[in-house]
Length: 556
Image (cartoon, rainbow, N blue to C red; front, side, top):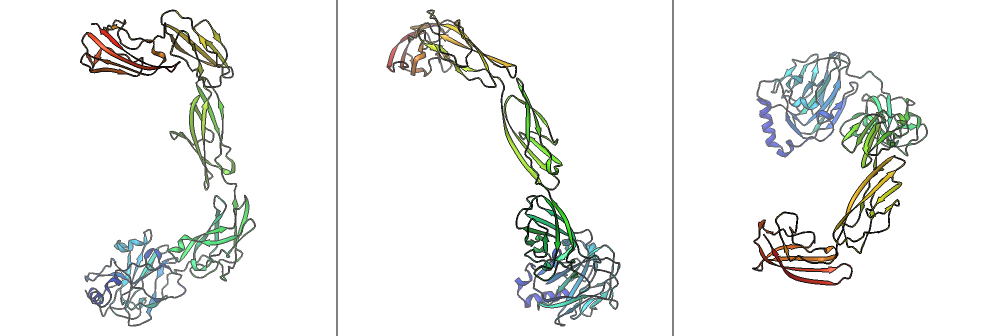
């Protein structure tokens, strides 16, 4: 319980808020740990106060073990053997603790929760130099005074990845030096750093460069002077998002002065304005002159065309993409309802319809999108408007509304006349003294499509256009005088027709002369008898206003 007891005392001596601070410096979290080379000491002159997240430790003394004021170190074992290291405080009166984790196949944050990652530790309450050495005692040294400061050297497994936590129990913020020495394990990467590959961005303005291993972020010249491209463009800057949170990176983005035109290029590394090329974690340099080649392809394009085979009712559209510039995949979307992965798909549409077609293409790296709105209007549809009712002295007018690739017309007017022009002249219909129906037919044809369509409308020629209201009607459903309405009111504009019962109650109202009273009110048959009607309208031809009133007899 000693470590926990000391923690409580320390907490009362120092500002409480300091212990709750989040660790923000690079190296103070497991995921941003210092990469260890194994050939040079790490010197940390200052240790900010932060942390205090619980650490799983195989001790049974009840003490609280935490990453107090931590720094973390990461390394890979390349040659199996023992690990030796020493941590020497700048102030030998400071108490430093440490714990080693095997994080192979794990997220670095798992060190706070997964107990099986433990390898060895030393949480002695004594101050001074600590570490792991051949003279060390045990792999688990828990909290308390009189506990040895050196633990036995753990055996590392080749190919495994490790994290070393150095925890500064004393709140002096004084730093330390750590040196990896005395063991037989190889934790220095034997591979020399080199350029591995480069890929140009799809718009040709950035070059993404990969190295064969991690290089120090501090060794990269921000102005991109470590690199030169053989013609086409110069390098304006070099950046790596990994360097925002880590000490090293294997991915660098070079921003170019202008888009590279299609062609083959060579990227060569040189000493930048910082006096070096890129350096790995052991400060070994990628040799000047190391180069690699890359290709800037023509940018992929999703532009497409189509051919159409027309029909009377349906059109067959064959979509075409030329596959240029190495396109290897096609993703077609037709009206967001059907798709195809073919290079040249076929669709069948109504010959009178509108469609949105989208294509996304890719060469495995870059992709492009194109879309077209396609309007199909070649379907032959015959249609026209004309008078529904006609006064005996008036002419019928015809408005052709047919659509499609029409090149011939055939009108049959029902009055003995015909026409083959698109927009025929008005037609007169002989009076018969009574309402007469005439059928008008239009046939529209397309010789190029070998298609035709026809449509018919009925014109009712009134026996008279004298507007009157019947004096009686018999709503018995026999088809004769079943309704009350203004007769022949085809030229009555702004019409108002009202019917009242004997009590003066409005029981029917209409502004359309074809809307007729069927002798019912609130869906109930009205009794036989006399009803009063009022009629207002403006004559369409003269503009004269009329007001008429009278009575009618409902006969049951």
